[in-house]
Length: 74
Image 1 (tube, rainbow, N blue to C red):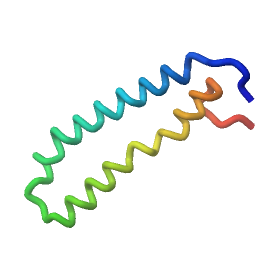
Image 2: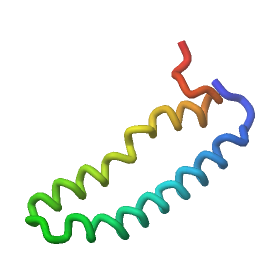
Image 3: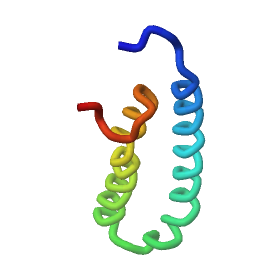
Image 4: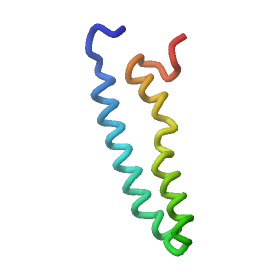
């Protein structure tokens, strides 16, 4: 268990926040142009997938914030 504060947590939170803002802007800017003419049900599925896809790297990122390593400790 960590006893002292680490610089990785505030840097990680700011990095995650910045990355999510960039990801959201890219999706909001480009997705409507690409899928705007598709049926609504297809657009809904695509936006749900795009809304969840950012979660994929989150586990390793949170591990790095806590331990300083990209893999879970043994």
